[in-house]
Structure formats: structure tokens, C-alpha cells
Image (cartoon, rainbow, N blue to C red):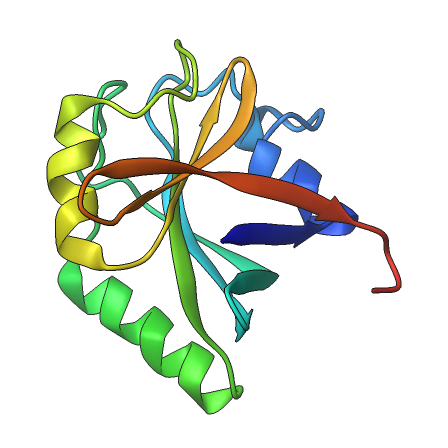
Length: 140
């Protein structure tokens, strides 16, 4: 499996642009979902939807269930689906934590983690597996 992300969305996910409110300088974990489509075993990301981290913590995130449900409905209305959950590790690397693993087990979809060392993705399939992230050109 591979997660394919258009270059124009890379900076939005990477959260490293010049605007303070969407940079890695933010002290709490940022979180949201990636909306797109599945093509065979690959996932193509079309949209990033960021949510408020209800925990307001630099070490973990919480998303209101109704917020997540609204994103699922939005994706479905547009002929797509929620293909991954993303969050940041604002003071660390993109390695999955033990807390992340427990939550990942329950979602059934990949998790994308943005750390100080870049973007990594994981899936739970009889254990945690790191999956490839590929950045696509603008006209894919």
C-alpha cells in the first residue's frame, strides 16, 4: 500500500508554511483527516480537513466523534472517502507512539504522522506496518 499526496497538498499536510497558525511552531498536536479515493491498494489524497485538537495537548490529540462523522459524510457526498487520519508530533519525529498504535488498531485506515523529520504513514495489519508516502505532480 502507498499513500499518494499531490504536491499542492504536501505543504498543507507538512504544516511548514510561513503562517504561524499552520506551522510546526504550534505547541499542540494538530489533527484531521485526509479525504480521497482508493485505487487498488493505493490511496490518493484529494483534500486535507483539519480539526481542532480537543485535548489541546502537545503529546496527543482527540477529535469529537461528531466532527469525524461530519467529515465522513462530506467525503461521501463528494464521491470520496476518509482515507487516512493525520496528526503532528510538533516536538518530535514521525515515529508512531504506543498511544497512536492503540488508536490505529481501531480505525482500520492508515495514519499519517507529520514530525520534525517529515511525513510518515502507518497501517495496522496484524501489527504496525510503515507504508510508503509518495508525492505526486500537480497534474496527476
